[in-house]
Image (tube, rainbow, N blue to C red; front, side):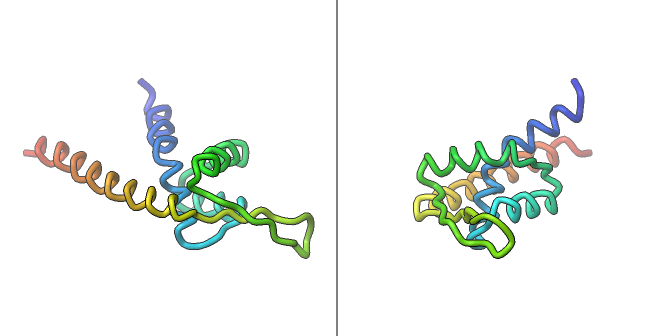
Length: 111
């Protein structure tokens, strides 16, 4: 089994959670979301991000608004809906529980 493949699958598994977390700090343009994810070492390209944003929007977790740009075409800014905020809270609880579980298995194997 290749380590890089496993690492990529782990990142992919938490990507939606991370997108919602980024948007919990306020409205964001797609480029801003990508930059935040890259800062967190979650390598993402637009071709990966757009389908995820569409899926989250269709699920009622995100909404967007258009805003005029002085340097080009209008920009689409995404934000969490009320349902998205609640979903993110539940994901954070689940994440915290998962981290504790993984740490428990790791620490129980230490000498």
